Length: 94
Image (cartoon, rainbow, N blue to C red; front, side, top):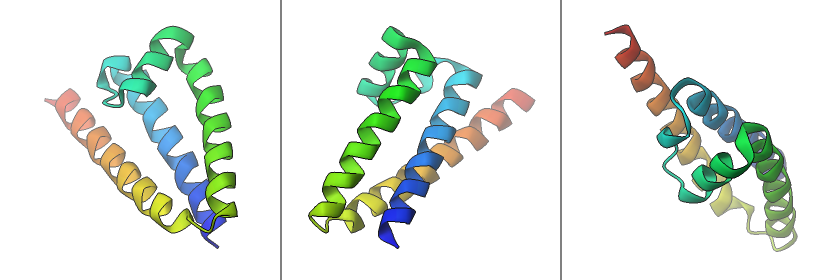
C-alpha cells in the first residue's frame, strides 16, 4: 500500500514540477538540486535523474520499512506544487 502511494506521489511531484518549469522556467523551482539538474541537463535530463533517484530511494526506504515519512513529505510537496501552479495560473490571468 505505502509502496504504491509513494510511487504515485513521486510521479505527481515529477509531473507538477515539470509543468511549473515548462510554464515559468527553471527559476520557479525552489529545490536547488532540481534547479541545477534542470539547468545542466534540461527538463528531459531532470526527468531521467528524478525517476532513477526516486526509484532507488523508494526501494531503499521500503526495504527498511521507512516509507511512511517519505509519503508524508511527498504529499506535502505535491500540495505545495499544486498551490504554486494555481498561483502561477492566477498571476497569468491578471
